[in-house]
Amino acid sequence: MSFSCEKCGFSNNEVQPAGTFQLKGSRYELRLIDMADFQRQVVKSDTATVKFIELDVEVPPGKGQLTNVEGLLTTLVDDLAFGQEERKKENPEVWAKVEEVIAKGRRMLAGELFPFRVAVDDPAGNSFIAPDPRDGVGKWEKREYLRTPEQNAMLGLADTATDGLDENGDIIPDQVYSFPAHCPGCMHPCTTNMKMVDIPHFRQVVLMNTTCDDCGYKSNDVKTGGEIPEKGKKISLKVKSAEDLARDILKSETCSMECPELSLAVNPGTLGGRFTTVEGLLTQVRDDLHAQIFEADADAGEEARINDSLSEAERQRWEEFFRDLNAAIKGEKEFTIILTDPIAASYVQSLADDPSQPDEQMTVEWYERTDEEEEDLGLKDMKVEGYEEEYAKEKEEEARKQTEEAAAE
Image (cartoon, rainbow, N blue to C red; front, side, top):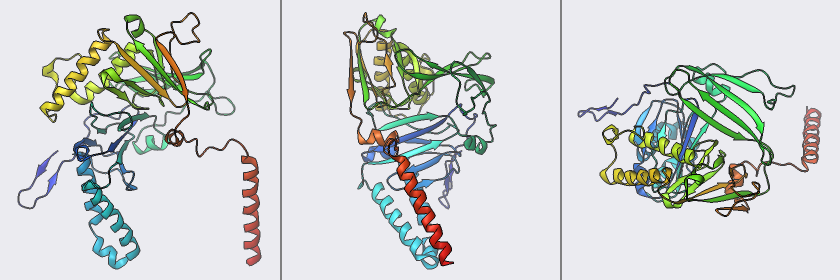
């Protein structure tokens, strides 16, 4: 819904989702590096939370909006500025802190504090930050996640927890678990199946599959388990033939993917975990991006592309991008696929005589994780040695304080 009043200047661009909740929640993050990034289109549903990370301000779920990043930040700053006079009289300390945030927000709007990040987190999966074909790794990111019981309750959904765990509450290997779900294609009830398996010479993974008997929708997701190795792994594969397109590939949810010849960069978490072929992975990327950019299937004709917000230059860039991607999927263009996984949970099938070793078109490199990767994985906060002594010291300190407090009373 969108309207404006010429007399008082009031305007409204509220968005109300016409569909239902998606199978998973989604989180988008954009790193702004110049003024052009303020014009990125944003769809914020009424269940989404917006956070400007460097500003350390989070906007809770409210009315849905069709806007851009500049509009989000401007609205945030204006909302904070509203009522500042009353705050200054009633609570000067709060007023001063809010003034600091407002001043920093206005400097961001003026382009003085690049780079900074904005995140839109929507447990309903109905929000969106527009990507750009020129985005590199680390600029635009989409992550999908399973909702927590609390998020399901907030959305009015039933908890989908299941029985069948062992005495420690862990999943039993090779046992199939079934969860009630709704098909994201036709919204009819369907079932999601899950199974944990051990892949020989690799590691433990969880396979998840959703199939709809009504419309034929299918999806699969892979989540890796096991210990985190000391180093990350980078796998490069030169794709030259149809045989290479048919190689099995496992891309974990922590893995980023690049194809320099195709100007393609996929951030960790964007596709979730996938166990498919090289062709299948590229097809998934193409279909997801095409549906978001042109609001139409990749196989639909030009007349079906209805995104009127794209400029002619942007449309031409996307058309060229999809032409190259389609050529690669058909085996008409050679390219390199690079998987960079900080937890070494990804895999590409080798065609060598010894399948445990890379073939001549593959290179495998182990690398030291960066501080940012360690932080994203939560490893900096993880203590696996010496924690017993530290825990005992904390207990002793807690007991000492309780004794002192009791004596003081």
